[in-house]
Image (cartoon, rainbow, N blue to C red; front, side, top):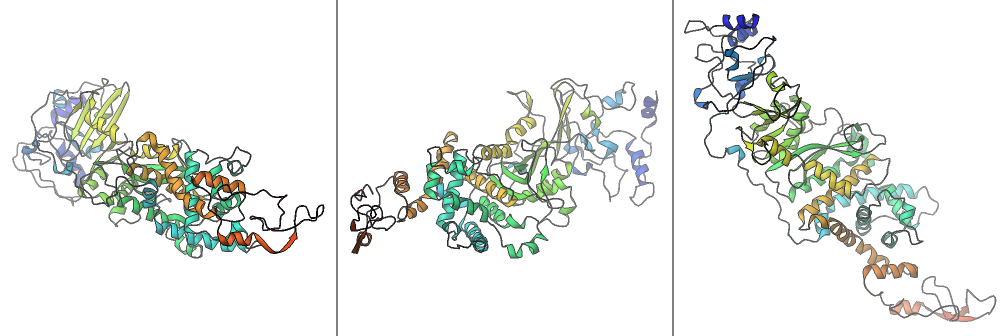
Length: 606
């Protein structure tokens, strides 16, 4: 009876004019709560002002307590209304069951049961504005597409700083002219990238280096043809991505200074050559790593558990990476934001930072419940973007009625403001899903799937990051390492290969062929340069000839002259037994050899 009495006593005063309440009054909160308790408004739409103002005046002289114009209202629909929440166990009164609003906790947010009145035209915020991009020829070679992302400025920085590290390593050896210690150039670095792509295509990224370069027939011939095992390992050891002399100073502002410069250039290249679709996805990517790093994260729901986190924005349909940044710990989400934006919640800061390149294009962002809030919906609305996502159930804006578990399976409840739609759906018994959308403004259903249209749209557009993760995991060049900058570099190469494949016209099942073609083009320059080395063994020259698909390079006149001695000398193989003298020298080792100890070969078979 206490509940019934509470509603019977709260009648509207008969006076037509009520005093204006100011926020400076000491009893402001109690006066607002008393005013709202008189009765429910007859309007059926709410807007962003439904969040109780912090610095505003509440005018109670109007006909409605919430001061919402009646023109925004729609007629009653045939959807069954849910029973409002009651503090007592007694049945609710008829006045409660017929009210037209839901309220969040402590009445912090008001939601109308009926959708706002709208005409049949497509809302302006759902009309996508095209974005400028550099046109890429449709029939571009795989290696050309790959080099769009790992551009020459990235390669030149890596080559420069790697050679600086090689100079330091040479000082630790007595023989400083060892072949594996020489400086790396652009041709050899491209060949190194090609070897990484081959290891991804062959799924041998976790295979031991000795097994890859084995000469007993169990190894990969292409690796031995490109470079020696010692040279490959030395490049892995010496690879650097920044100036070590200034790293400590730069780490004061950015703890990821060892790799952040080339990562930012790579992200900038990703934004040049692709036009995003209507829908984008924001989520985190965890790159597996168990070494020492101050910003390593533990995420039990991820397959790898431990790793380095990258916040990403991708195309919702293809999974193309468009924008990303490295999460380096607390306050790293707000880098580059204004002071006002830094006051937002950390997930909201992440969404605002990632959405900077696509603001004012009316595109949609789909994200999970970690990023979703009423706050981010309002912020994105200001910059011309819409948002769809699941919502955590502990948000205070969610009405208690939306969280009830004893509801019919597949039942829905909607709450509307002028720009935001809140949905509560029961997919199965004792489970409730809460969704928020600034793109949908009605109670539409997906007839084929028999679920609300908001949920159907979310299911089709939420997989952008998951698709990118899957593609990177299927063909990954990541090798086991204790250096976290190398982990980020490997992921850059993986994403560059994925983005290049998306730009191409290859079919999904031809991705292996695409990666092999790109890798072949990257290593070809090194193969052509290596085949003319005189000291190279005949076995490797034959291997290079077979890989290049061309005949061996004919012997030049100078080489032919160098194979003859002006003075006859003893054969270095049989001089102790036969004492034969000869004027012929071996083409490889340049030692004198008689005709009985050698086998002649023509230029084609050489």
